[in-house]
Image (cartoon, rainbow, N blue to C red; front, side, top):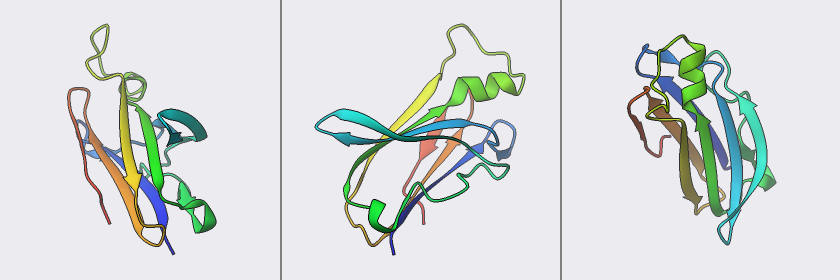
Length: 117
């Protein structure tokens, strides 16, 4: 059964991004409809899959990670405005029966992502 998960690693501190706020939306014809807002747990993950079962269906989706707020909360001195404020990842799910994992590796100055397993 397919599902969608996410995980954020704080590469500046070498740890999971516990407490980072994330918004998750579905995109239809360029319009984002928020499906849920969440706070990542101590392991830098959502407590449950973002989509699974009948909710995990093909389409375009968006994750918005509140990067600057997370690093400011950790006491990192950020410029005003911060170099990275929110990181927005738009991605597609093509197969409802596959696991899609969207990790984010992030610092106040850079990020990377990939389709994980």
